[in-house]
Image (cartoon, rainbow, N blue to C red):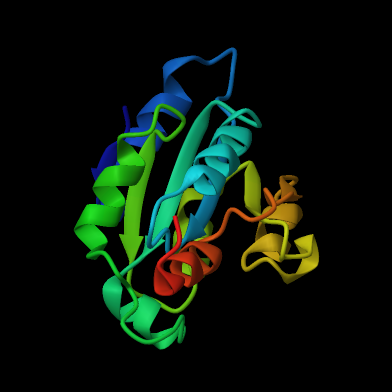
Length: 163
């Protein structure tokens, strides 16, 4: 089970983990998103992201950040603390950190992940932080979506009253 942490706490913990074993540098994977209504597509995506490395850090947009992204009326559905706690409860997630900015660029530059991951609707060169990660010798990956498994599709089904 993961932890919801502040950025300073995350930095301390990652530094400690990176220095624990001089023979093996743990590969840190970073992804981010709103994760407004957690669904199986999220679970599969995060599992796949975690398999790429040793530590999975998930950046979660704050409530204000989600609203600025214009995800739709009434979004986010769930409060940022609830979204973060749900993500941290997944076995694949090691750390969850909230961010209030429009993008996770600051977090990415501070934690310097080995692998940066987003969902299949993002080409690797479009992913925020990709230039930084690649310049440091890291990898940037766009993982495939699981068809029909999205918050937008789920909200549409709820709106129609179908299960």
